[in-house]
Image (cartoon, rainbow, N blue to C red):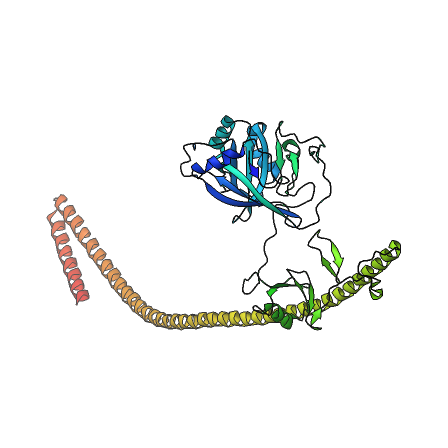
Length: 476
């Protein structure tokens, strides 16, 4: 379906080359992409994609080839196969590629068995989220053509020239494109979809190349990404002296004298002002090799000889490695001890500073508490003075009212005695009057004797006269 200029890196094409030239009449966009392990072999190419201007209508001249653009790196191959669901059985081949300018994302080229399956896949998945918990949306674009421009080999290529069909590294069965269901990872290793869907890791089962690339380091101060050095003691990342010089500033502040150059993996000693590494990582295969290794027969003029005694050379190499490891362990122990003393001093300073702050805070809180208590005491004293004055006034008023009450009681007593005497006199007068009245009635009833009547009248007159005079005398 897609063509290539390199037969080793291309996926076989089912179309004639003449159709690629006729595809220029359609409106398409060009995108650069790459695949492969950058340390070993990197394949680059061009991709002709139909623009996604009108997603509701299908483009004219489309083929059973689509590209899923912008798949997040955290989705493994198994996750993508599970996301495709029932369309897996209609997919003949899938290839994972990297689109230029898209970081933390990869794209998937998918070739279907017929056009109907391709259209159904486009309608079902275009604009659909990869997960309900994420915001990334699946973008499906119809692909007109894929052209591989070439490959760059960083390692020695294999001498094997077998013409047999490749086999799946998992099940060891042949990868027949006619049967379909083949997935090629980003490092150009092919598997059956049913086999790779059981691999839960994001790395390749063959070479362990991970599609999730490590984040680029930046200077902790100026945020630059060039000429970076990382402290082997604490991991501080700073730029070199030809940039901002933050790495050497870190050494002056912390006395961490060993720093690793991120690009070349070489170790620099600021105290000795030279490189001190013994082993570096090979860019070819990633293995550790000895730096500036010279041949044992270099003094005899041998430029490229091979030592006969491999056991002796291996023993010498092991002894060198062991000596380097011991030296590194001692160096690391010394640096860790210095680091321990440095951080202990920092902790002591922080502890003293925190104690000073705590003491200041306590003193401030105590002073504020004392001020509040003193204000309460003053307020209580004012209230006590007010209550004392009020009590004194109440005591004085009590004495005054007591004297008034006593005087009133005396007057009441006198008035009561006078009233009692008067009532007694009135009772006596009333008794005399009653006697007089009864006497008068008796006299009227006794009409038998005039003498007695006269005598009684005289006596009553005398007694009344006497009582009247007494009464007048008492009133006077």
